[in-house]
Image (cartoon, rainbow, N blue to C red; front, side):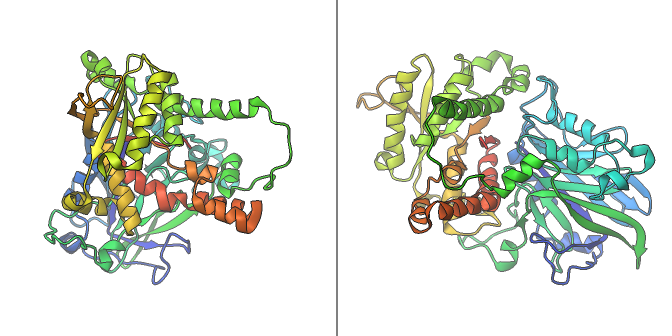
Amino acid sequence: MCGIALIVSGLRIGLPTDSSIPTSGAEIINFTNRSDLYSRAVVSVDDLKAALLRRGPDSLGAKTLTLESRISTPIDYLENCCAELRFFGATLQLRGLDAVVQPFEDSSGNILIYNGEIFGGVHVDRDGNDGEVLLHMLGKCCSCSSSEHETACSSNEQGRDSIPHVLSSIKGPWALIYWQYKSRTLWFGRDAFGRRSLLVHWPTESDNRFLLSSVSPGSSLEQNSDMEVDNGADVNFWEELSCGIYSLSFDTRKIHGWLTGQVKRHGWTNSTLMELIKWDRLSVEPQPVVFHSSHSQNVLLALRKSVMLRTSFHTNFQAVKSESRQNDIGPVAILFSGGLDSMILAALLNECLDLNYGIDLLNVSFDGECAPDRISAKAGLQELRRLAPLRRWKLVEIDADLSNLTTEMKHVMTLIKPAKTYMDLNIGTALWLAASGEGWVYEGTNNINNENQQRFRYKSEARIVLVGSGADEQCAGYGRHKTKYRCGSWRGLHEEMKLDMQRIWKRNMGRDDRCISDNGKEISFLG
């Protein structure tokens, strides 16, 4: 998991009408003097870098780009420049043999900060780094930002892929910010289901900068000890960037001394991806068919492949860093309740992961041993040990009391922004605690219910966390799905599930990504 951010200042920006972009007074927005801007900004650079570093503890890099007319010059700071772009990238590195530091930059002046995984669509060698590969692919793209790619490209760029085409071909979760030097265009966006967080602050009177960030940073200046720390301006500062691909083209013209820019949204070019987004089924009402075992086998094969893709590369970089400890560290953990989704994940992971590695099962309880999830987790552990007795399974019991988590919950309140409901806070707190991996495990491997066994403190060092998020939305696992079926038959159920999948980026994925990744973990959804 990585943390990426961008701060753009000194610009007049035009925003199109879009569901994710404010339109009131947004035709052209002026930026104020930069020194005054920094003195009263809601988000400070130091706080932003600290938040990113929690997500990507292996390295943190920054780059400043200044723009004036047709000149772009990378320097540390220039007081009187027309516009300034500040890129920040923190990396949790899982792929590649050599350590990398973001932002990535090529010899042509293109800059990329990237948070994601490429599992297909773009070829990445087993020992390669996907961020470096993606920069190379984007560097070969044409420099047009028109939706009419085939006709808009200049004659010497005909035949090259467009940036939306390359991004649409990626199989896997991603969010990125990319500067194309030749066209003076900033590209940014996130995958079609929002599996990687990317927040946006569109310019306002209180803070006229344009900001993108993986996470909302907490303020080091905040002194309020009350849980209700969010005032209206702070809560509304960030919003989830709608899934998609965007460009911000910097015009050569100046208006009253200001460089101008225009934001544009681009469509996906992958027809299969567009069908998934629409979530339309050929047959909403199931037809009577003869059941074949191949149907369930196909689903199982798809799930197994998904787990394999997400866990097959995990040793590359870490083996180089700490070869002597490679077999001591379980590289993958599971958020584990003992429920159907987490049990299936655990069983599949056992098939995909070398037996030399242990598997940590992370279980959070706010009600001690009496919590239903703790009871089912212990039962699930026993079943997994019967299924795979040679595997080292560790049930990490993470006990928490909400009344004693004031400081932690204030931190989680920052992470879940722009979400602000108690449900988001409770779910976010559970995810954040689970991903920390700090809890208790029992001695021995056979009987966790033996009263003579002792628990000891344990911290999981797994850098990849598998989660079952999205299973209920895709498989009608919520109680309201049953209600919709009763009231509206198959059509009513279909419409409810379609709504769930089309808003999962806003209600679930971004929030879950921010809460889990804050512990320096790679969150892996199977979708």
